[in-house]
Image (tube, rainbow, N blue to C red; front, side, top):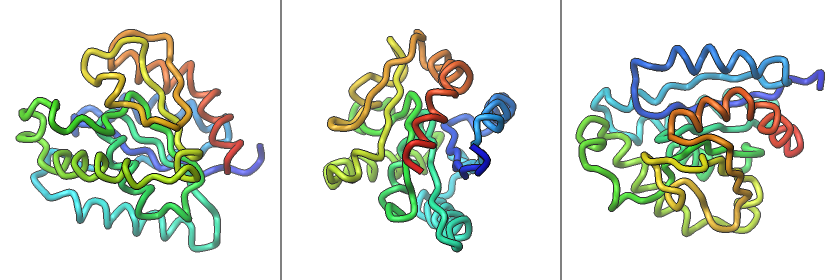
Length: 195
């Protein structure tokens, strides 16, 4: 466990509430993971495509020496994580979705899209890309979901044929907090086993 594994962390909606996640992610460093926080800035009014291109360049920079990276996408960030993986699948060893909104475009409350137009594009694209996933891709994906999540339905946060783990938490935020804290050793073991 001497080697630090680069983990790109893509947060969800709420551009002004990232500090608590950044603080919790410090707990991952002793687990052999170097977390690189990459805010999407969902609510800045910019389209998703330039945000995805920026993330692709970020991965290219990290992997120029041949290393592979892991991606963790939380809530709305899960859609961006899948889109980024599909753009850079050869350079990514594993993707972890935490209480992720990966699909369910038609059932998503439109107010989220009004405030976060890039999320609308990201979710529409990720839902389409799920159909293109091969078994080799699905083997790299881990979906973590809460026992009950009133914000993101279970079907919207999982992908058939991937590893799915239910964390012992009720509620969207508690599912995320549990995963980032008590669930961190499991996530770290999963990432290390595939990197």
